Image (cartoon, rainbow, N blue to C red):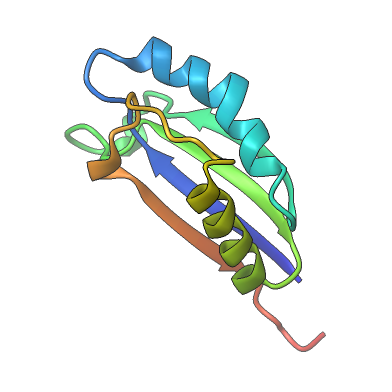
Length: 109
């Protein structure tokens, strides 16, 4: 089953360097070790005239490619987080964190 996990996030104010160091050098690897997570990539918002007025709600995005049942991947992710195998950084602004899993639509073809 083709699905993706999108994680929109921000660093705590003034902590972008430490946040990016943690995410790039620790967290990304921890998440990609979860059964069913094939790979992950990180992005940061690009200034654009298309963004409209004001600041976007998130500065960073991680996209993870998943293989298998998204429910199973979510459960495995939660289990690793509960045991401390996935560690969160105090530089992550949890109040703005947004995580969704999307699956490819079955078009019947």
